[in-house]
Amino acid sequence: MSGRSWLAAAALLCLHGWALAAPPRDGSHDFDFDLGTWHTHTTRLVQPLSGAAEWREMDGLTIVRPLFGGRGNVAEYRAAGSAGAVELVALRLYHPQSGQWSIHFATPGVGVLGTPYGTGGARAGRVEFYDQEEFAGRQILVRFAIWSTGQDTAQSEQAFSADGGQTWETNWINRYTRSADGPPVKLPPP
Image (cartoon, rainbow, N blue to C red; front, side):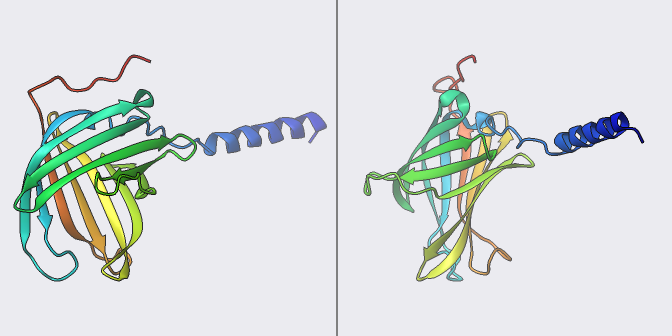
């Protein structure tokens, strides 16, 4: 094989390898369905990972606003009911280098934005986050997932695993219905 043929073959191999090493999936629009104002119905397991089966309910409002042209968002949640009262803010930020999102929480009682609760991204229409935390004196895995269930409905769930992810116990379920009180929050044009 001539020198020119070797060079052409090497160039083709390099181009082929480059095409196989695709950049991370662009997940910057994973939360577009979630933008807007939502009536939120929450059911919460009172004592997670205890074997108890008592659930309590809350009703409230969730408002999700875009940041950075959709590559981030802030979700404000406020609800009350037999499960008590909860107010929190979730900051979700997209990391273009990894193609993943991080999620951070804050409550008025603490007043500080926490370290990332987890990282994650979209799979099969669900945005999922995973984290390891201490709960009741032991290390557990935590999964938070949110997904669209229709044009004006969505759902999110939090689940705990005490066995390294082999089994999961859902302990918090939010069912969202888009509010007719105001238009959904729209992203500005690029």
